[in-house]
Image (tube, rainbow, N blue to C red):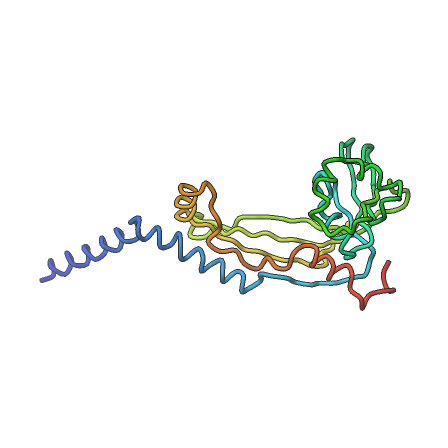
Amino acid sequence: MRHTIVKQVVSLKGFFVLLLTSPIWFLIIDRFYGVYVAKRMCRDDGGETMFASTYVGGYLRSAEMIGAYCVDCMTALPAHKFEFIDVYLPTRGHIPGMKEPGFYRYTLSTVDDPRCDVWENNQQYKGVKHSYPFKADECLAVERLTGPASNYSWKQVGTRIPIVGGLFFIGRRDTIVYEVDSARVLSRTREYSYQSRTTWLIETASTGFANADIRCGGQPGIIELLQRTLRDPSKRGTTG
C-alpha cells in the first residue's frame, strides 16, 4: 500500500515537472502571463503624472533629437501650441540654417521674412511642408540665439523589466518633461508594452514585422504633454 502511494506521489510530481517544462506551459506564460503583468503595471503607475507646471514660450531640443526638419517645430509652431522651439547644435551640422555649433531658435513667420529663406529654398523641406498645418504664407524662421535658451526640455527613457526569473521582459518607456539646469521632472507619461515570443515568431514569419501583444499607458502625445506642462494658463505671468 505504502509503495503504491509513493509511486502515485512520484508520478504526480513528475506530471507537474513535465507540465511546467512543456512547450504548452511555456507558451501560456509567454503569451498570457506577460500581458497580465503589463496590464497590472499600467494600472499601478502607467499613464500621465503631473508633478508641476509652468507657463513659458517654448522649450529646448538637441539637434540629434529633432531630425533633419525639426518635426517638433513643424508640428507645434504652426498649430500655435508654442511661440518658439530652441535647438542646440553641439557640433557643425547640415541642418538648414544651423551650421555652426550653438543655440538656435525656431519661430513661426511669413514667407517674406528673410529668416525663412534657408528653409523655403530647401527642396526637401518644401516637399514635406504640406504634411504639416502651415498656412500658405507661413514658414519656419530660424536664427542663432544671442541670449539664453529655454530651460525646459523633454526626453524619452526606455528600460526592460525582467519577469519569471528573467525569462521574459516587460518594456517600459518614460516620456519626461524636465528643467534643464536642475533636472527636476515636471511631468511624465509611462508606457508599458509586452511582446511575446509567440507573437514575434508568428507575425515576423507572416509579415516581417511584429506588434506588441499589449501597449498601454502612453497617452497623451508628447506635444499635448508639453503643452499641459509648459503652457499652463493658471501660471501665466508667474514664471519666465
